[in-house]
Each structure stands twice: as structure tokens, then as C-alpha cells.
Length: 183
Image 1 (cartoon, helix red, strand yellow):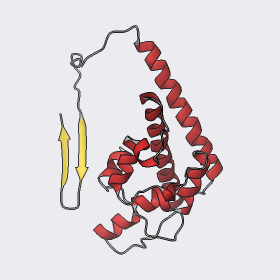
Image 2: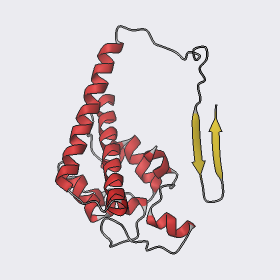
Image 3: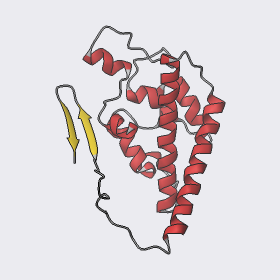
Image 4: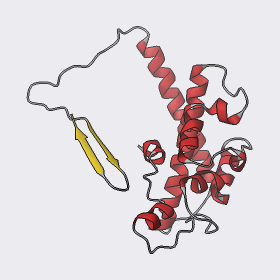
């Protein structure tokens, strides 16, 4: 959901709040130096840069060609195209790189919200270790699912059991409209 909200520029960053409602200090919660846009918050902010550097063995997020939320999505979907090197040898490695990037974005968003709403603190080392731990946890889960699914046939959609109702829900919010879909 976070990635979708980033792509739609629907995160309540300070820039978006000022543009839509007005009247608030637009500076970044983490560094206080620039306007808090998605691009700044996740890649250009000093705190985010330190976290990317610590969590990604020296990745300089400020040198990535990211200037729009679309660029962020492109990076996550196809990291090799933005990073400019062959970082993944196969599809599984590419998926893990994308997953690790999303976990990094989530951690930056979490740190920002903790600082803003709960008077939290910034601990780059702790956040970096958490990113690595969560990535490893997901990687192990995915590997286990692949070995478990080799012997099973593909499972398709099944209707709900008697007395149960299945609801699929999605929502979209833009500057002038809101939509809710339920299937």
C-alpha cells in the first residue's frame, strides 16, 4: 500500500499537506532542511541518505536519478535500470533487491511518523539492522514457499464457504476526487 501511495503522490508528506490544506511548515520532519516531498524524504534527506548508505553497503541514494514519484516506482520495479549495473543475476535476486528497497522505504516512513507523532528518535544503526533482518526473513519465507509449492498443483480462486462473504476493497484519492471500489 505504501508503494501505491508513493506512486499516486498520495502520502501525507508535508509538501502534500501544504498544497492541499495549507498553513503548515513544509520542511522535512527528519532533517528540517528542505521541503518534505516523497523524493526528498526517501532519497535526498540526510537521514534517508544515511540509512540507504548503512543498509545497502554504501549506496548513495542522493546520486540516484530520482526527481518524481514515477522515478521511485521505476527504481523499485526494475532496480537494474536505475542503478546502472547488473546487480541481480536472475529474477529472484531482482525481486529481493526490490523487496529490500520497499522495506527501506517503509522504515524511512516509519521513522518519520514516529518522530512526528510519537516524539520518537532516529537510530540509523538500529533501522539498518531491522531492514536487513526483515529482508532475510522475507527471503527465507519466499524460499520456503517455493520449495513447498513444487509438489502442489496450482490453486485457483475458490468461492467463499457457505455463510461467508469475500470482499475485495481498493481506494484512490486524488486532489479533486475520491473513489472506493468493493467487489
